[in-house]
Length: 243
Image 1 (tube, one colour):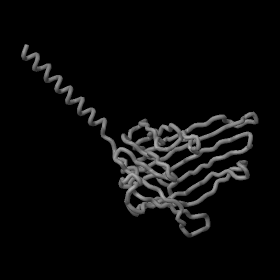
Image 2 (image 1 turned 90 degrees about the horizontal axis):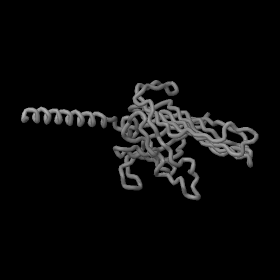
Image 3 (image 1 turned 90 degrees about the vertical axis):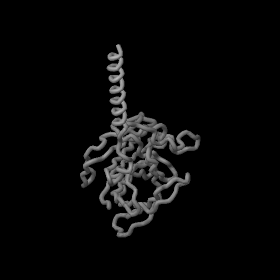
Image 4 (image 1 turned 180 degrees about the horizontal axis):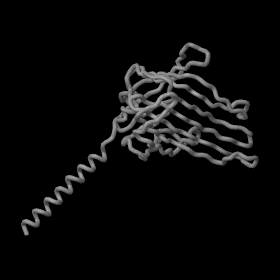
């Protein structure tokens, strides 16, 4: 009997060790800094295609620019946390000069990568970096107040796709990237003469290992028959240079 108990105890111990090892292996993941590195002086230059609606929302125009996002300094954010300040510069077509355009903040917490743009705090990346993992990327944005302009951003699920997969963006081919699908939604499409209201939202980003954000596609517009026009905008960032 004692021998049988010893064998049973040893089997339980081995099973426990295997379970612990398996759990440890499942928890292994790459650091977020691999896909969103922050080093003072680092920059990425993008081709920016901007969609705007003119002539009272009846004409859609795409304007083309170049923008450069550069890490300027390591400082602290409004919560007193270490944060990187980023400057964006814009170059209009035909102009040789970079013009200061905006300031952003990037914060690595270990578990999240936060990006603050126009006073909106996004959870751009989150642990674990794993296929199909999802999180509420807009949780810090006021999407429910009566006077908010960001109701359409409510309850977005950011989802990892093509984790550690190669991708081609513009003229670059990257060995390891992650795609973050943030939103793809529409209502009332296609627009026909009977359509009174329609809207479309699309948001997607691609990050390349050891480089950062290499592609961004954001689109949101609404159509209202009472005005017979569109309101909204879209931007597409495609990396064309980096250091």
